[in-house]
Amino acid sequence: MKPTLLLLAAGMGSRYGGLKQLDGLGPNGETIMDYSIYDAVKAGFGKIVFVIRKDFEQDFREKVLSKYEGHVPAELCFQSLDALPEGFACPEGRVKPWGTNHAVLMAKDVVNEPFCVINCDDFYNRDAFMVIGKFLADLPEGSANRYAMVGFRVGNTLSENGTVARGICSKDVDGNLTTVVERTEIMRVDGKVSYKDEQGCWVAVDDNTPVSMNMWGFTPDYFAHSEEYFKEFLSDPANMSNPKAEFFIPLMVNKLINDGTATVKVLDTTSKWFGVTYAADRQGVVDRIQGLVDEGVYPGKLW
Image (cartoon, rainbow, N blue to C red; front, side, top):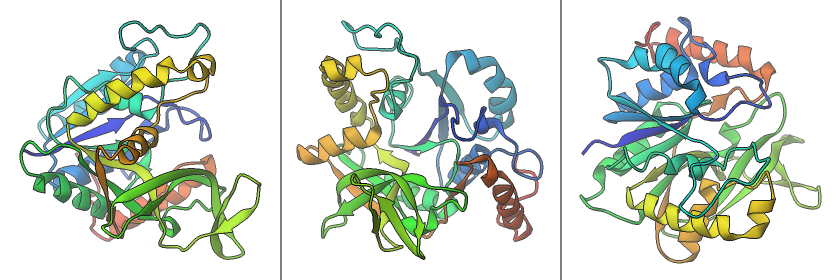
């Protein structure tokens, strides 16, 4: 069974402004997710599923889904604040979405095969899709609790225009993930990749340290784990009273690892990430995509 690509497209780009998922950056107006889907199809993925906001549906069908007709099967599902387990209600005044793992949960009724989760506004590059696609395709039928994460080398994931947030990963001797620690400020300081710790000090790390770019490989049993833990998350008064509390993928993954329920293989990639974290990043992304087109990595017009 070919794996599915699950694209998280419900968020707004707060630091960049606007719906950057629909920003045409390629020579014929291609978006970053157009390139992700093109690379995923090349890597053997057989279906794409988007998680979006319901109020965005008409625009999305016209501007995005229509492009892929005849190329790859595509489906939509919707993230909303009130999509909660029975017995729970959205707190009054909450406007922030419930986070990336809540978005993943929205696809539980349409994804029945191994799947890869990505952000829509990150340019992951083809090697990353080849690596995760092979892992998922090679899983024995009926596999459960054997997941993966593409571990980008942190030095390949920085912005020239400010700090970035990354999940810094540790792994054991078997190459399995042991922890993901979210670091919200990472940049080069005196030539070395560094993150700001809880005391406000810069801590240097090796350029090849693996970081999470939210590129995960799961099997469908992950949905059941997520449903159960989301109930625990919502049962915590601290989360329900905090309008910014979010149910993130690393939160779920860390729990499964710590409980001994699942293993998460850290897959190395030579891919160099780029994306539009800041408005000033945009032209650099346009230039890099044009460079890849000039090199023949991508055709001038994808679809």
